[in-house]
Length: 362
Image 1 (cartoon, rainbow, N blue to C red):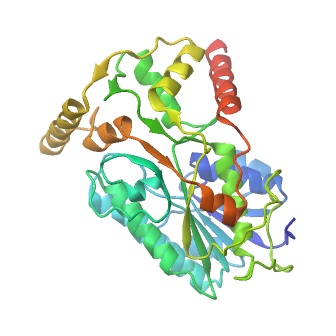
Image 2: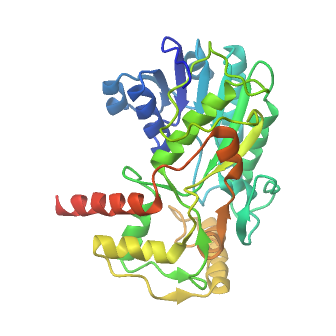
């Protein structure tokens, strides 16, 4: 158990998003003083006791206010998506992260936990059981992977005696409250617009939101250990997640970690399981990957040329992500963070199906 100094605040960026919001809720439930950065009001978190600081990653004053007196910053905010200009992705994900690092240094923040992405090792092909030794992405069909890779590099390079940093790479986060991954799949399937890309046998890792929040809290706790693995009794940290008492053997400072459920699934089998559970017809139609990839390239060109609003219905990045393996070795997170996924795929999937059944019946 780590000692919690509840009089010291923590600062969460991206609290209007799925991961940042659930993380803030857990911190508040643990009795922590929580500040959150948000571009819009967050009455739910305010009602729970959070201090909402209006602003974004381009606002030095808002970042200064959030970091003032804080011992830990959870930097979750960022631009996500599969469409947009490279300049916009880099402005938010790299420029915004640099601004957070600057604010942390000026306010003498001791610990920074950065929410990265497994997309930082995107290579256009299968990623089957790889670990953190995989090289960072330098080229991709969209700006998200390369901008996140550049931001992660900045965070890890900033690690030092005055600011301890760690990066987490949670993959395809889902669960009740998700407004992006699963709802989008369900909407496309319900409209008859979802097709299996490739063979349909590709394996992927997906990660329940509760496990992702656990990983963030464990990462904070692990940063409070010195290199020899000794806990600093004067440092703050929320209680470790139940069942995660394994002591860290390596200091995580300056390192990145894949975070998943540790149970890779055949992607399209899992999607069809969800569809059956909520009463939507399963997906059976296939599109060969080369066809989907070519269509994505053509649609991207049309969207840029015309230009059209929104994002293309298919992109080259999405075609590859939906057809290739991407599952990861989480041995390092287990060893160094004491991370153990507590919500299993079976339990989490059943919970999610019940959640959508209730929504549909209300």
